[in-house]
Length: 424
Image (tube, rainbow, N blue to C red; front, side, top):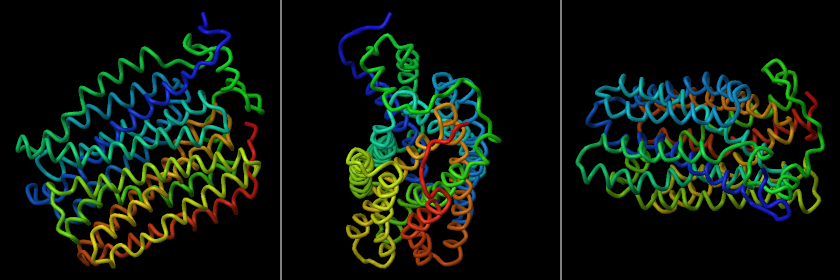
């Protein structure tokens, strides 16, 4: 029986908090290798090219499994899909601690990618189920802030644990109990809104307030979304932008170490600054897009203006390899990373703007596949460049990071001149 029939509940924010926590755990587990990479490179003995291969293997597995996970989650539902995802990646994280060579890390990263590929399709589907369109960009911006929270906590906690225990393996072990607690909370609280006893009738009406396209329960496959230009616009948005975020995550600590001499003990404050600032900027940019819609700009203009703002925030990062100031570099990377967070929030919302709820998991999977393919190409390429050029080679990926979003937006506009919900 539904509770609080005549009052307004806000249980959707409880669900959003669980999405935020899961994404935080994901990024702690994912970013641990990048934080420890300068020291592991010395102790394990991998080359720049081998490190690039390790990250490329992760991205290849992520690409393959992301598109499969999107379809699986549309089939089995958000509740079960998220459980499968976090279960696999938590066990894979433990596997890092058993690695003894660069090949061992490649195997562990491959396994990690299988599990983590289900996080964003699950979370986007949950947002589509629990939030009206006008609030989705903000909701996605908040839960996607878990990426920043994870990357904020990682350089603060992981070095302290590793240095305190004098054992790098601790950096891959400490999140496992937290994941178990999350699973228990998810099992207790997550249902679809219409099935949740914690949701009042008033809140349910609000959640469904702008669903202007009637949807059925027919399952959606890839063949149903690929004929639509919107699916390819999402793919381009992810293909060109996601590799930039992967670059910051996997090479950020190495860049600061090689360019400015920042070691494991001192990495915390620069990374804390970068990701705390980028989180706030990302939420602001997600809010800005929602604000454009509420101001009457319309879905098409409002969403694209939001994407444009995000792209402009990233442009100055091209200066980073050419500055001699650590904190100028940190500030510019923070600005660009914030632009990416806002971009990600708007692109995820664009999926549910164009496609009905029943297809969001599949579309997210297709977009994630494209982003991961781009990430695999960039990871291998960056490793090759740094192996042959050295620290000066960082100028190339930072240049791509500065202009990639605006190029992607132009292609999105050409593919989808007017954003409307398709009828599948």
